[in-house]
Image 1 (cartoon, rainbow, N blue to C red):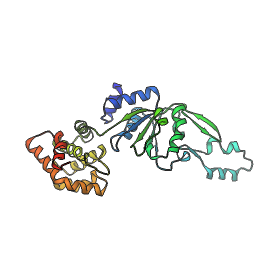
Image 2: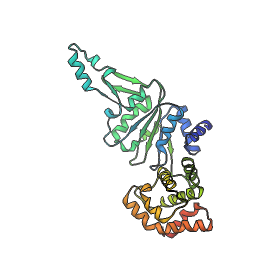
Image 3: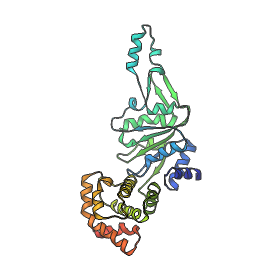
Image 4: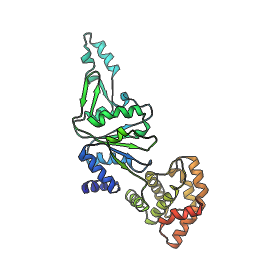
Length: 302
């Protein structure tokens, strides 16, 4: 497990012991890992890093409402079949439904790979319950039934990551087939460490103020709370503009980097003077920015 932690850190992923333990066990037990948590906390990134440290391919299935087996599993290249029929008068059905005419979608691609790959089933909670049920055979037996050709069994079980933002409850049947990991927003210290890892040129004062700001804002009732990705984007933007600390004007100008919803921007603007005042006080009195969340709650009577 220590090796997993070291490799993840080398790739710039700063996690915790629960994350490293879950990834380690999922690999050793050859079981899928279901990761739930708010958007933007690094769930999908785990699969990307896993592919990098194993020097293998990342096969991603992005889930959405209405996703069916043909888009996730396989389809037949009907155009190629028609051209073949025109060119050959004597064709049997077995030839027409051979692998030459098979279009492999992500799930079949992962199952038939000649080596271990990373299979990312991203945002499974966006797919319909029917599709979730369809996955059960794959996740338990690592095989896929194709009516025209028969059952395909995995040569190498893929490292499988499922992510969910909890848009809807997932079935117990799916959960039983997976190991489970919950990832929440990071603590102030952890987010500061992540920020300094991804934006090494940022000065410590600015990095601390950014983390304090974002941590305080996440306590508000927003349509979309900023994730770690937004924190990093904001830090990069402020660094490009040569900011040394947070100023009201530049914060106001860059709210669109952090918040992706106009109602959220307007809500943040309404408390921005109070928040910037608290940041200035912590700066003046050299108080730890970890206290900013409490100070912000007092300032806005939340």
